[in-house]
Structure formats: structure tokens, C-alpha cells
Length: 397
Image 1: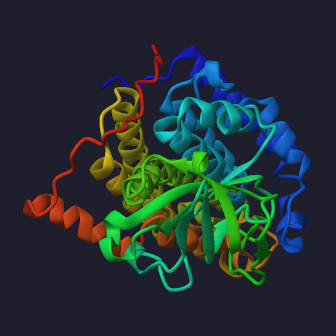
Image 2: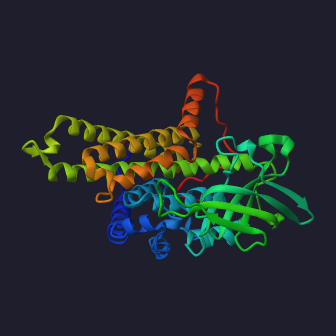
Image 3: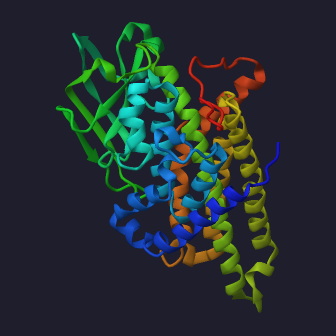
């Protein structure tokens, strides 16, 4: 595989980095303290084509490849995890799932406005009693004529108060367990829908996260995504895309930790020399660099498989697990390098540490990915190609 970036990808990286430097970093401390970011950022993300970056042009997107998506996520997370999360959920979990599983009518109605940034998409899988154990969900939908009556609740949903459209999972046949879960496109304006933000989060404070409530929502049959009973497969395929963006963002966070630590290591002097001359500081920075390089290779390996239209659950799982762990460790070391100042808001590394913890948990905990990788090696798990696969990035439809 050739990991050299094309001129288009290099230009994309510089464009996103310039956007982050000019429009996010100067305000992020204030947004983090307030628990919200300026909604105008959504307009700018759309202007840059990032909300449909790897969606085909025929559906309103930029038509770039999946490693371009990784580049964008890296650079956005250098600014703050909340902005990478927004793209992960809107593009990775929602829009790419519509591209993969949606009917042509659904793509025209929902995917195109999302790719253009005119509408915002989100993803509702987790429930108060169902995180890693998806089969424990209690949300349920009953077919009544031309509509499904949906009842239930979702929690820890990013963009809960912002998104216009949600891909939501619910049982249509509880007795069938995993095979009885179905996926639906839910609109915010549907009667019986409500949302509520979660306050007091440890990290990613400027991002909107919360709960969704469904009380006798009548969903048209044409809003069923895929077929009845395909919801679990749809959710897992969506997570292949979401985890890819999370892993790419973690690479960007490691880079941010390196840059902050290098700056401080040159500025701060102790015992008559810059702290960057002390061996244990060098050791921490060296670990960051090793984690950065290894994580980046894992991410772009998964991205290349996506570019070829090959299922990549195993590779994406490994990239997500390792990159997020490396990012959490890099942030912890960055705080240590900054000493007491690292424990304050005077430098960004405290925010990096707070933000680095959530990705270790969501979209598959560290423990879930550990088990997945062990089962692959032991021969206990083999992935079959899905009935709906993402197309190669050339999009020759």
C-alpha cells in the first residue's frame, strides 16, 4: 500500500488545519467552559465540504476517498474532540450508513441535504441499559398499517439537540434477539420525539450529548432502513465507519499532545536547562511519537481497505482500540510534562486528557475490542461480507 498523500489530500490537510487554527482554537477554551460551540461552525464545516467529504458528488458530497475523511478527522481533533465527534456522527455513523443501506428515495430525501450540510444527521443505538450489550435494548416498534409505532429511549447520543434526522434502532421482534432489531430514519419534527442534553460531562464539554425519547412516534414504512431484522447488521456496519473516524481523530489528538509538549519542553527550564533535555521527559515524548506513528499506520491501512470496498471490521477495531489508548496515554504524559500547569486551563493539555477518555469507551470499549481481536486470532470470529457494502471510493455507480 502506498501511504503517500496526493496533492488533493495535502491541500485538504492544510485547509482543515488553517480552519482549526483560525476558527476553533481561539475560542475553544470559552466554548469548553460554556458547554457549547458556536453553531456557525456547522456552516463553515459545510462550506469546506467536510460534512459530505466521502459521499459521492451525485448525492451532494465531495466525492473524496476514505483516507481524506481520516485526514479531516485528524485535523479537527487537533482543535477539539467535539468537532471530530460531530463529523464522526453526522458523516461516519449516519450519512455513510444511508449511502450503504438506504433506498434511492431515502438517499434523495435524507442523504443529499446531509452531505450538503443543509441538514444534520445523528445515530441512536445506546440505551440506559444497553451499551455494549446491544441485544438488551428496550426500544420497540410495532407495525400498524402503513406506520411503525416507536417507543423507547436512547442515551449518550451526540448531536441530540442539534440533529434533524436520526438513524434509530429498535426491536420489531424481541423473540428473535439480534435478528429482531430493525433500523429507522426518525425526524426531529415527528410527533412524540424529544431530546435532552446531558450536563456535567468530564470531557468533550463543548459537544452536544444527551438523550432521545420516543413516545408513540408514528414512522412511515418507507423510513425503515434496510429490511426488518437487519438492524443489528446495519448498526455493526455503521460502527465500522464510526470507529474509523474515532481512530483517525485519536491520531490528531496525539499530534496535538506532541506539539503542546514540545513547545513547553523548549520554554520551561529547570536545573539550568530546558526540560526537554531531561531523559524522562524525552522518554514521554518518544512514547507519544511511537503511538502516533503506529496509530496512523493502522488507520490508513483500514482506510485503504475501505477505498477498495473490502470489509474491514477487524482492522478498524484494532485501529480504534490502539489509537484511543495511545491518545489517552499521550494526554496523560502531556499533563505530566506540563507539571502543575498541566492541571490547569492555562494550557490545552488538561482538556486533551479530559477529551481522550470518552473515545476509549464509546463505539466499542477497550474491553470489547480486546475480546474481538482475541477471537479473531483464536479463530472464534470470522466476518462475512455484508449484503450491502460501501462502494470503492471511485464511486463508479
